[in-house]
Every structure is written in structure tokens, then in C-alpha cells.
Amino acid sequence: DSGVTQTPKHLITATGQRVTLRCSPRSGDLSVYWYQQSLDQGLQFLIQYYNGEERAKGNILERFSAQQFPDLHSELNLSSLELGDSALYFCASSVALAGKNTDTQYFGPGTRLTVL
Amino acid sequence: DQQVKQNSPSLSVQEGRISILNCDYTNSMFDYFLWYKKYPAEGPTFLISISSIKDKNEDGRFTVFLNKSAKHLSLHIVPSQPGDSAVYFCAASAPGGSYIPTFGRGTSLIVHP
Image (cartoon, rainbow over all chains, first blue to last red; front, side, top):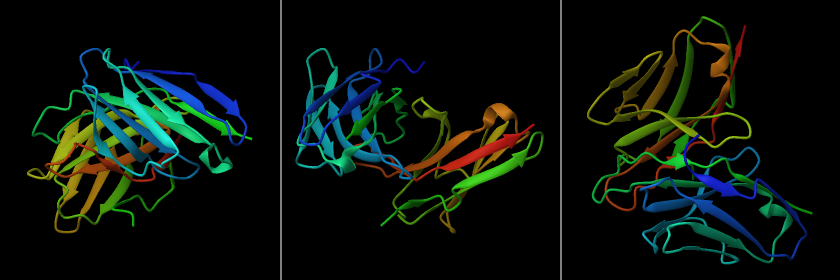
């Protein structure tokens, strides 16, 4: 158990809909990352939040947005869903010490999104 | 353009033998490398890492080798066990910026009893 929790585990929805994925980081971790893993693809970085502020953006579509709340949990909002958005969405957390890139990320179990 | 490449999608090894998983990278700014292991229905878990100032790091049955001139790293598992069957992701990060590692696509290791 990494200490990172994600809900829901599975989500099935229709094209055009909007969903929200939730992540609670490990106790003490200030940074949250969101990744997408599509079939046969590696982990594609979407976005990072640090202590409530957006810190880095990756290949995140404009239809997607995220936020990190004062209690440090994070939500990833996916809207106007398309078939191609079907994927595993992982959240990870880390301490993210300033000035160091030797940071270990701890991943949650993921949310499997299926868009029909 | 993939900056971290794992060219073997899968690897099959007999229990007790050595498993060697390979990873190549193109960004010469990468100076920290990690391996993650992922079981089905679980998130990736950190396995081992290596800094660019080293060429080898060992942790029990797992050893990572780094060849900076070739921009290549490998993960050796000796001896391999059936419980090692998982997908292994190689990742690399560069100094500065936001600590975001770039991941490869993964290699699925199957260890046969």
C-alpha cells in the first residue's frame, strides 16, 4: 500500500459526459501528479500541483483540468469525453523538495475510465 | 519523440535465471534514473534508482547499471522469481524544473516456474 488513494476504481460513462477523479496523497506529501496510461502507452504526465498551486503541465488537453485543495487532496476533471479518453488515470504524490530532482513518486492504484 | 525508450515490450525468463531489462534515453540532461514495477490492477511502485554520478546501484536481487556514454541503463534481477512477473517502467529526470520523470512504455517480464 503506497498510502495514495484514488476513487473511484472504475468509471464507465458516455461520450460527451464529464467526470471527476479524486486523489488523496500520502501523509506529508505536498505534491500531486496526474498521469494517463492508454493501451500500450507509457505513463503520460498530465499535470502537477504543489501545495495547492499548479507547478507543471504536461500533455494535458484543454478539456481536462485539475485542482489541489487546502487539505492537499486533488481532483482531475475530464469533460466532453471522447472514446480516446478511455485509459488508466494514476495519481502520484511526493515530498517534492525544492531544488532536488531525486524525488520518489508514490502512485495510487489508478482509476480505469471507460468511455462508451 | 520518446526520450526514454524501452524497446522490448516483453521478456520471458526461467525462474532462477537472470532477467535483464534495458532502457535507452536521448536527453543528455537526464541525471537521475528510476525503475518502477507495476502489477496488474495496481499503481507503479518504486524499485530502484541511480544517479548519473554512479554507474551501478544494487539493492538485494536488483542491480541497475548506467552507461552514460551510451545513454543506456539496464535492470538486472538475479535470481528471477515468479513474483517478479510484472511490467517494469524505466524513468529519467533532469535537474531543475519540476521533478517530473519521463517514463518509458514499459517491459512486461514473465518469470516461468
